[in-house]
Image (cartoon, rainbow, N blue to C red):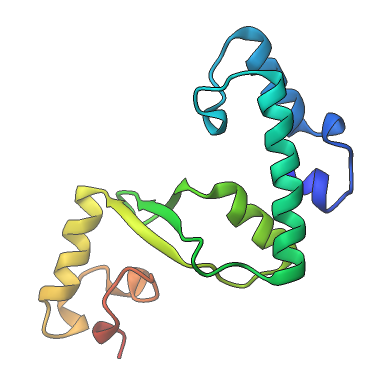
Length: 143
């Protein structure tokens, strides 16, 4: 939906984002990014905020103090915990990287990551090739 809005310049009402959120509001489902203010008026205010955020990032670049929180799943997959709209807008604009803070790591991922920290050589790690380029693996093992 954000791509429809900002890349295709569609009106909000013509995006899947809008339709999906309005369907949720009408049926009484929770729209996560509205917190406790689950009204059409608050949703429209949020859309105005997204428009302003897009223009701000486009004109001024991504604010490096606006850190996105992420979680890392059992196989090293990244999941945005907070800041997905900012991340999506930055991506649409062409920002190559944004600062993130890891909030949670799945226990299985942390175990795999710890093996990298504990190893004296990369050769000691069975699945090293698959994960050497992962940003959450210690730099010292990427030699």
